[in-house]
Length: 80
Image 1 (spheres, rainbow, N blue to C red):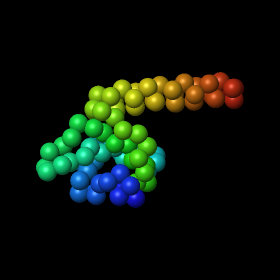
Image 2 (spheres, rainbow, N blue to C red):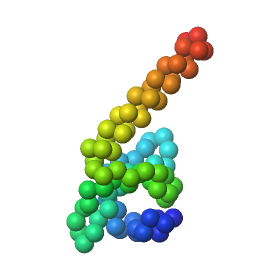
Image 3 (cartoon, rainbow, N blue to C red):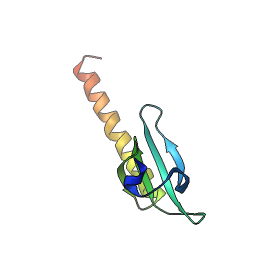
Image 4 (cartoon, helix red, strand yellow):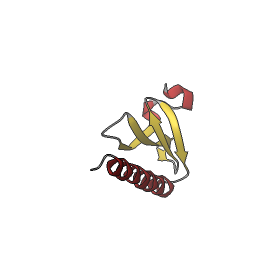
C-alpha cells in the first residue's frame, strides 16, 4: 500500500495516530533528514498532504470544530 506513495515504512516518521480509526500522520525521511510535509494516511492510502506541521495542525482543529458542531446538531435533533 505504501508503495503507492513511493515510501517504505522506514522512510516515514510517525507523528500522530487516531485512536478511533486506522489514520496515521507521518513525515517523510530522506537520507536521515525529516522533511517538512505531513502525510495523512489511512490503511496505507494517502488521504491528504500538508506543507507543514502548522498547516496540518490548523486543518485538524478545523476538522474537530466541524465534527463537534455536527455532533451538537445531531444531539439537538434527537432531543438531547
